[in-house]
Each structure stands twice: as C-alpha cells, then as structure tokens.
Image (cartoon, rainbow, N blue to C red; front, side):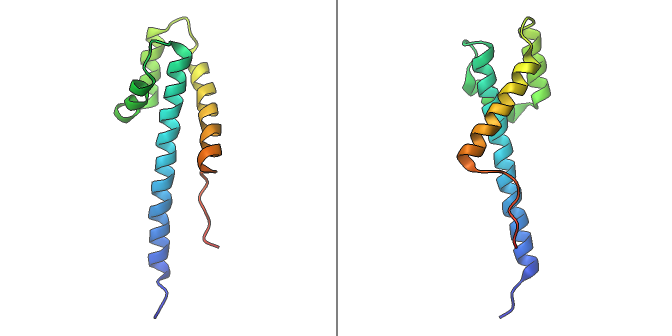
Amino acid sequence: MVFDLRGAMLKKQEVESARLAEFDWRWRARTMRLLAARLDPALSPDEMAADTARRDDEAILADLAARYREADVQKHYDQCRAEARRALIEELGDPTPHRLA
C-alpha cells in the first residue's frame, strides 16, 4: 500500500479553503451585527448579517453612510471588525492555515 501524497495535499487544500471561507463569512456577519447594534438600535442585526450574502461590505457601508450622515460609519466598521475578529479567534481559534509537518 502506497501513501498518496498528492491526494493528501489536495484534501488538505480543500479542507483549509473551506475552513478559511467559513471563518471569513462569520467574521463579516459578526462585524455587521456589531455595527448594527452600534449605529442604531432600530437596525436588525440579523438582517445586516444576512445582507453580507447579497452584497459586499463596501456597498453595505455606502448605504449606511448615506443613511447615517452624522455617524462616522467607517470608523465604527473598523472597530467592529477588530472586535469581531478577536471574539471569533477566542471561540474558534486562530484562522491561520495548519501545517502538515
């Protein structure tokens, strides 16, 4: 029986890509939930998180900036993004790829 190194590397690539994509989506969704809570209690965190599946962050932020002119949306977004990443790393661990060796 021979070890299939190519197969192992392809499987690792597939698993790592899926894991990183999931972390990235959770990071975006959590950021938008935190941003909704920070900008306006009337904003639905669930709707903001779901909006990440339909549009990119720049489009969402442009709409929020137009709606909340007095608020510095980009500053709040950056703070929420950092907070969301810290929380996810505490919950799920560091997202950097795992090495085989």
